[in-house]
Length: 415
Image 1 (cartoon, rainbow, N blue to C red):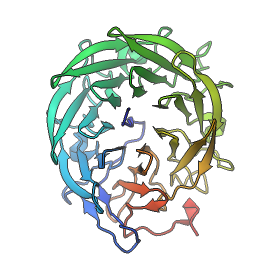
Image 2: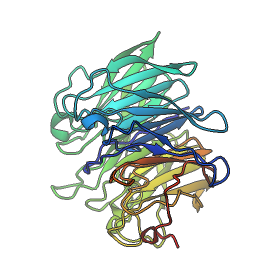
Image 3: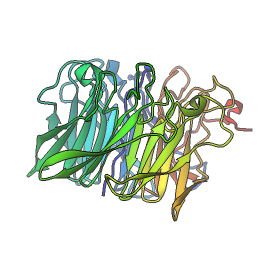
Image 4: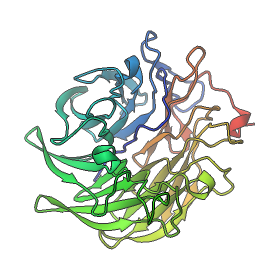
């Protein structure tokens, strides 16, 4: 069963310092966890992942954009920061940590910045994470953005390279055997064209892959509304089975900006749909025969909130990020929305999101294991650190990660 979530670099440059706190049942019990004070360029929460009692937080802006990842052990009553990971080949603007995929003992980290891009794999032994491999595409080139999106399921890793072939995009499948990772396949869309950005988002469940192409053109230049492609693996090869699209495709929806995949459902984010209020389309069925089931949105949302910017699917729980939400178009507080499935229908369910403040972009990244939800807010500000970044862990309706300096912000709908 896949236990991964990926988050991708976007157009906005974010800088900051990690600040996490833990409230063990009450708001008063807060333990701040901070990166070294000498570092002031973090983007903490740009990518997040959760699995097996561990939380990973990407900090791709750390050290002039070289990037880092912080790991937290949350298997006991309190989460503990255990380790900070860095690239094997650190260099400014490589942005190690811009995408993450995690299961109980394996972590994949994307590094899609300057150069050809890379993905690194770490494995856990006890409480220690060690580098197992550094991966790149055999046919990679500069500006491919290899590592912009990741999905991990057991011994298979899917890596998006949305900039490949003049931004037509590609995805790469890697397989592990005996601790060694090898490139198994390059995955392309059958109808791909320059500028589609295929590989901007990826999801993986067993032998099924879902790859987003949010700028896929419908008919003519300027009509791009996006698509998501379903592939299955058999006999060591990946075959394209189906193209998923919005039932009412409109230019500029960016359908496929984010994707998530379960055993019988697929979710596709279209954050610029409906005057950029955003939406999530859910499909049900088997690979090759998936049918549209429901469009999820935020009733009463203001234009511009961009629901579907990020997605996480765990069983019957679906979480979508809306990082530009607020009481006015410029607030950009952000939020995450949770939907739960009962039978064939999905409905909204309350989710305490830690009272985001204006301009923090909460929901830029999300992750969920069905019990805990992690929300990344990479533009969160602290005094003297205007883009500090933060991640929050929500256990059910209880905000477990919070910050002792947070105050309700009227711009974000708080009293």
